[in-house]
Amino acid sequence: MLPITLSKIASIINAKLINNISNDIILTISLDSRKITKNQKCLFIALKGKNFDAHNFILEAIHNGAIAILVCYECKINIPQLIVSNTKIALGKLSLWVRQQYSIKALTITGSSGKTSVKEITTSILKQCGHVLCNFGNQNNDIGVPITLLKLTSKHDFVVIELGANKFNDIMWTNSLVKPEIVLINNISFAHLKGFKDIYGVSKAKSEIFLEKSVCHCVINLNSNDIPNWKIFFYNKKIWYFSLHKKNLAHFFIINTINVNNSIDYYLCTPIGKCKLTIPLFGIYNISNIVAASALAILAGASLSAVIEGISQLLPISSRLYPIFLSKNKLLIDDSYNANVSSTILAAKTLSKFNSYKIMIISDILELGNNSILYHNFIGKIIKNFKINEILTIGKLSYFLGKNINHNKHFFDLINLIKYTKKLILYYNNITVLVKGSHNTLANYIVNMLINNILC
Image 1 (cartoon, rainbow, N blue to C red):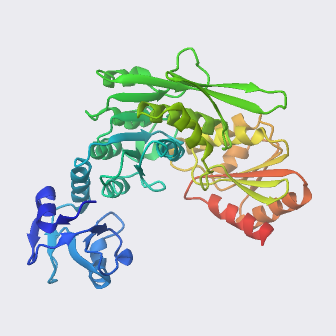
Image 2 (cartoon, rainbow, N blue to C red; image 1 turned 120 degrees about the vertical axis):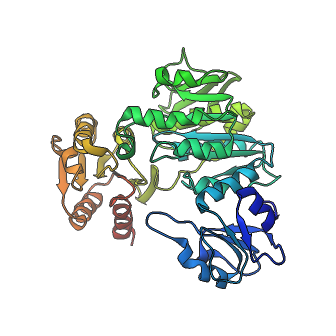
Image 3 (cartoon, helix red, strand yellow; image 1 turned 135 degrees about the vertical axis):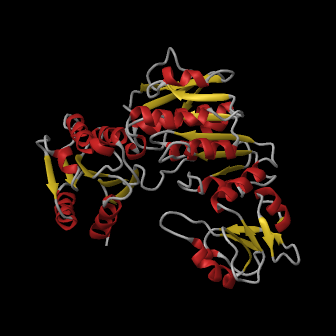
């Protein structure tokens, strides 16, 4: 972020400024009072939500070194104060101002799954072409996106932002801050149905990414979309399709060939030519993510050599099909970050390809709305036909997933699940265990407990 005076910030966010004696220059902004240190020239922004109120930590922020505060009401403290009706909206306004200071190639990404992976892959490719700013981890909401934009400097050539949503208008708001030229919907699936009700609601929410006037290029998955309802947004925009299968219709797609040693060669086909890729990530959907990211990067100006180099430097992303070798031929795959209907089925399909004794552990899949039991039952009917030796379920909802699977064993407590899985890992010389579940379930604890029980 540029050094900026308090009076300038006040004019940008339309704030009332009080106690501004010296009109200090702000160098940093923080939302967390614990992370402020002396001599940072820090502005502390007191956000207020349903379950928290950072105004309660103003004194701690000042004690730690904040020289000014952005608040919703005047506080009885002799320190510069910017007063607004909504500090979150003020944060967005300030981030938009920072974004508008730079002429930069901006890209935004949304979808029901794979957003973070596509963001990381796109970033890796574009790093071969210049300096890239992207949101850290999954900071993809109405707080994470503006905080990311505040980090923009004149050194950056690209900004790559992942956009998440739990309700309508989330993407419209965050995308309006980024002002992207290139956007992508990676896929649509049964996810966050508590807020969106059904797949049509998911489609409507994701399509908000097309509405920003700055958008010139739209990248769309030919195999997962709602094009008939999106077409009204395509006027005056260039549409690019990517796919793994519909090669005659897609602009970006993969050709794979099996060589004499039974290894697979992947060739990426694009409007600027074809190149051979070495893909270091598990899973068919990671191949799709690579095609999507390559499309984004190429439209932003990347060459095929940049694509090749960027993909060769990829590392597995934590908790997303992340491989953990417990010992020789004993592999634990951590896919515990989150889950929806399609990503769970694809994870099972990925596991089925391994040449080992295969175990899939599935905890509850959340945010599926009133039809949660129906969707869990649907997943079970699909994955029971995959070549997986045992499917272990834990949780109230996952019970219905495994109900019709003969090789399913359901657990009602974590300890017994860990004990049983440990026995299998110790018994079989060649075994692969994949853990899948929603973010707010036991899935990540299962991974950690297995690691601690086997490796420690």
